[in-house]
Each structure stands twice: as structure tokens, then as C-alpha cells.
Image (cartoon, rainbow, N blue to C red; front, side, top):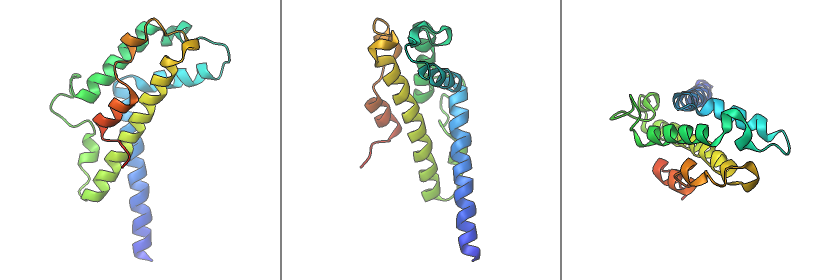
Length: 149
């Protein structure tokens, strides 16, 4: 029926918006490249992540500072504006909340993945860890309102 086609189309558009907004956020703070490098490095057993040039502690600390600045709205161009401007344009309240919740969840999962990788002793970040990850996954979940009810 026409209604079911509209629902399918709306779901596809929602999925597309979530993917695009997540990608834009990751790109804005440099997270995309680091997540790809992290995934590649994790596939190589015995490799210490902190020894890889793009994943050394200084690079990861800079990445996380940019990530946190974006979350707190203190990065250039983010101050006073929404973290997810395209999501805010969705007119229907329920759909907008769904999209924002899904993007927030993606951001939270990416942070959790980085936090876990940096926190694992065998990855070589033990000395630098307090200076690299300033917030726990639970704190980021709270900030993004990703806490399961």
C-alpha cells in the first residue's frame, strides 16, 4: 500500500541521515581516519597500537581533545550550534529524536571502542592513558543522553 511504501521510504531516509550525520561528525574531529587505522591495527596480532605512527599517544591525545571539544561545542564552528544540525531539520519530532538518538549512539560506540583500545595495557598507552582519554564511556553516554532506560 501507499502507506507502507511511505514508511519504508521514511526508514531509508532516516538510515541515510544517520549515516551521513555520523560520518560528518567523525570526519569533523578526525575520528574516521583513526577508527580505520585502529581497525587495521587490531587485525594484526601482537602489534602495540601506541607504536603505530598515526596511533601514537600524542596523536590519540590530540584526536580525543578534538572529539571532546566537538561534544562540548567548543571547537571552531561548533560553539552555539547544534552537534547534529542536519538532524535538527527533521520536522517530525519523533523521527528527529530517533535520528539524534541513533547518531548519539554511534558516537558513543566509537568513543567506547577508542577508550577500550587505549585502556588495554598491551596496546602501550599505560603511561599516557590519563592524558589521552579524559572521559569514561559512561560520562560520554550521559553527555549524549545515550543511557538505556
